[in-house]
Image (cartoon, rainbow, N blue to C red):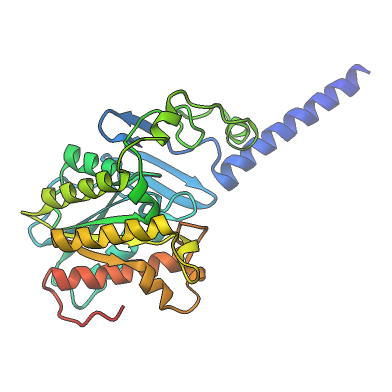
Length: 322
């Protein structure tokens, strides 16, 4: 009987070890990206992290950007573009480091025969669920990094984004502030355990007032911060359900019109991908899910942004084909 118990215990421990190693090596569990709270920004990815999730490499540099380490000062002969955004710009766990919009743009601009720059950097300052006010606060804290161009990439939902808050950090399973002791613990916390309500979070989500107007004001402030030293480009991607018929919902149509009017009044260069996606064959193939883009979508968006930037930076004179 005692020997049987020892055998059972050994089998259980063996299965535990195999499961732990498998979850770590195959899926990257046990080493999630961690977040830190910030009084103005709300939250941002903790600096200097590397991990691999579901086979995709993720690197966060010392400025909480998704990307390799950078020098604060740009080389005189170089081109630097700062991409600000949420999970669409960031790419999340489903996107390898080399397949983010910023990485695709950097490779293309580096090899482009139309570019006159010896060195090209496309910085990626982004985090899941950031809105214009988070991105403005990041810019106010860190500056533009002497970028010749700043690209703000938003999606339709960002027009209704709430005020920055650090409440989810360490409380929401998607925003951990520390590494779990085991991969099995992370799987339990992320997929099995019930998410506990976060005190005061409902008040944030029910923020009163003209949210669209507040976020448009934040976009205007971002433009103002970049006006003297950088070209500013605003880009918006649609939700998957907005494509085709019946199209955006009534409140989204009104918000979109306000954004259009605002960009004209403020003289903001603006690319709306809704009509662009609607004019392509099978735009659904560009999406990873209902809002995020896959590699094909990232390539499509990066190419359009790149053409627009080259025109605005005076390196190329082309008629827009999108």
